[in-house]
Every structure is written in C-alpha cells, then in structure tokens.
Length: 111
Image (cartoon, rainbow, N blue to C red):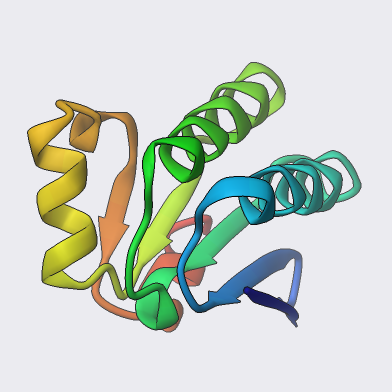
C-alpha cells in the first residue's frame, strides 16, 4: 500500500493506493491519526484507489475515525468503490462515516 497526502486549504486528504490489510493497516492508521492531530481533525480519506480492505484495515479505519471524532469533525470518506462499501455495509460500519462522491465535495463539506 502506498499513501499520498494532499493539502486542500485547511483540509488534509490521504489517498491509500492498494489494499488496506495486515501490517499496512497499522501504518495507514498511524499516518491518518498523525494528519488529523496536526490539522484539527479536518481529514478526508480518498478511498478511490483502495481495491480491498480486510478486518485489520477496517479496525484501523474505525480506530482512526474514533480518535479524530474526539477532537474535531468526523472522518469523511470519498470515492468509496462498491467492494469497500459492501464490506462496510456487511460489517455494519457504514454509519460510522460521512461519504462523498469526490475529494472536492468532501473538502467543501468542512466549510
């Protein structure tokens, strides 16, 4: 998994590329929490390049989301594909996040 981040004004966008699973999940969580802590929680995960997420990836996503929600706005996801959305629905975790179709709409939601 490769992680890239972008600044959109006061909002940080993290884009994981590849599956979020196993040991990569911890790296993903730590990177996301670090971004949020340094940015008052204004973070978006651009999930458009995540092909698959396993239980460790889900756990990392939920833990990061809970951490972010303690100090700021909730974590926002954009570009979630059908496979990842189905996993979130099946595990009943879909209600934990706000969803947007693209990065721009997710970033604008902080205004």
